[in-house]
Length: 362
Image (cartoon, rainbow, N blue to C red; front, side, top):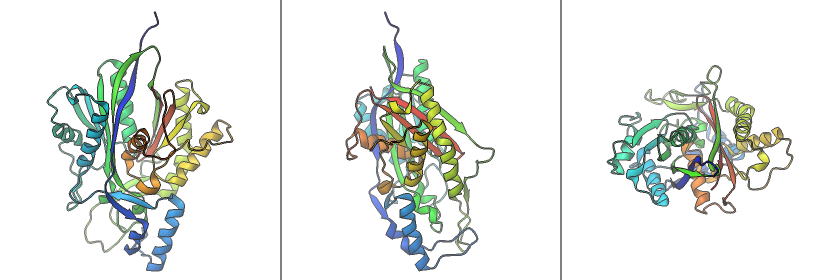
């Protein structure tokens, strides 16, 4: 009799897309500065906004309402995923929430990290089970994918049976309104329920790879005061060396994806979907082309890389689980996932960190 294989399988997905829509035109009223403290005149601001759309493909993004916190978005996504999975929340062994700034209130720019967001979600779900371990994972934009990798170890080791993995962020409250890069950022949350299943064949998470390049690249993303020298206080905002980060991602992400595929003896030709962190459409397209060149494949199949950034913006750890949920629920036109399909997830972000997961849909 063939031996049984233990696999980590996603059995439910959910997401929270805030209702407040912010268009590119809304930024025309902003006064942008460069790091040296010089500001653009209104005519230059209009050209900056137009160029931004051309570079990133972002037309609009979603912001949380003033009464919402990151943990609120995480909770709503978690409830959707739990409903889809049809499990009893008391049977969860882990709740892991990936984020980077905790709860930041609309009227207070300071990060609130105690208790953890995972503890807050567990409390709001009214889970009594003391052996359901709730913790947070700050890992830059790849945080949700890294949490999924950690959970895979727990489930396949036999230490756990079920886990809830959430990515949630409100970037609109940590982005400098006087920095052009603030147009990239958005708010949202996504979640999955993952379960250990036994079977003759490996399904679900097949392999993964992660790297951290801190020596030379740790501060491509960092926190600093506003570019406006007359801002009025010394609160810290998210800052980015955008061009250097772009070049770093192109040079490294494709190799990490290939490594994850090699670890489960698959090739890019076996992949049905490439789900990349929604950071910048042009960057993701360039990463995909370079990945195909690594495999000496000339044609990139149409629809292999579904995108949401044009209307959702960059919500950091929330982009990948949100993208997955929209596909699973049939809410992305022309996109579906069928049994046996191989998906590759990949993300890059602050640290600098990169990770990739290969997943076979059951």
